[in-house]
Image 1 (cartoon, rainbow, N blue to C red):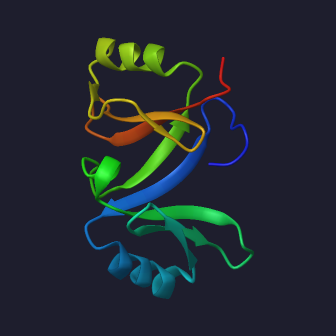
Image 2: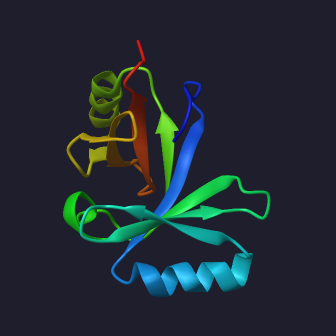
Image 3: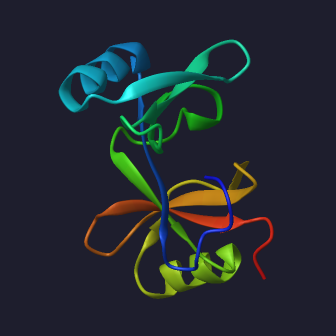
Length: 128
């Protein structure tokens, strides 16, 4: 999640699963992505890169702060004010699935919309 993304843009995509190594190898074979280990302290998650070297996705272990994330391809949508977005989520019939967490130069949380779709909302630390 580098740079300052625009409000409303999809900032990042990742997948959190129990067996990240197996799923990393699956996507390496199926898509041609190249995995790069990202240290999480006692283990590594993976940043997946395209053939041009662009960081395109993450494959993460369902451990630590990620233990409560569902095993779905999660899109992270940039918002200006995470607290306001969470209030609007509740007001409009959505559900906040995780409390806000610090990550990648900002904060995020996972929500479910009224139709049942899941995504994450991400507020960069330099957002208004």
